[in-house]
Image 1 (spheres, rainbow, N blue to C red):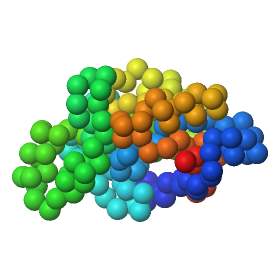
Image 2: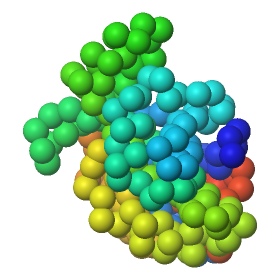
Image 3: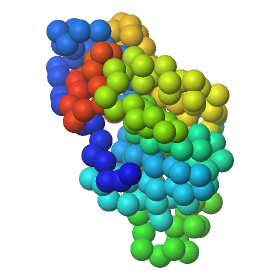
Image 4: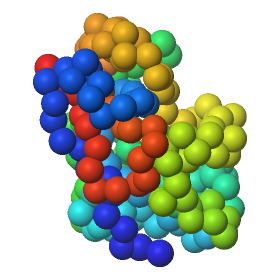
Length: 199
C-alpha cells in the first residue's frame, strides 16, 4: 500500500565504473516522471518519487493500467509523453509537465491531445506476493512474464546485461529524450540506492 519510496540512483562516471558492483542489469533512463503504480482490481493509484499523488493528472494512464496491467500489482516505472512518427518519436518532458494542471477539464483535454504512457522497470508486488526483498534477476523474470506482451500505452522497459550494448545506447537513443543509463546489481533487493551511469 502507498506510500512507498522508490529506489533512487546515484551518479557514476560511466558504464565501466559499475563493474565493481558485480553483475549488472542496464536499462535506458528516459526523460519523464518517476511513477509507482498501485493496482488492485479497478483501483489504480499513481504516485511520484516523493510519494505525491499523480492519479488525477493522468486519467489515460489509469485507464490503460486497468486494461493492461495484472489485476493486483505494484510497479516502479516512468510516465512519459512521446511525439512524432512511429520509429522516430521523441520524449517531450515539457509537454508532460503541462499535464500537472489544477483544472480537470484541461487535464482531460490534454489526455486526449497528448496521451501519456507508462514504462515499467521494476516489480514490487504481484498478486499476494511481495517482491522487494528478492534479487533483481528474479524480479525481472517475473516482470517479463507479467508484462512482456505489452505494446502500449503501458510498456516493459528494454534491458541488457551487456555493458557494451548499454554504452551504445548513448549514441543510439541520442535526440529521443534519452537521459542516461541506469545500472542495477542483479543480485540486489529493491532498495533506496542503485548506480546510475551518465556522461
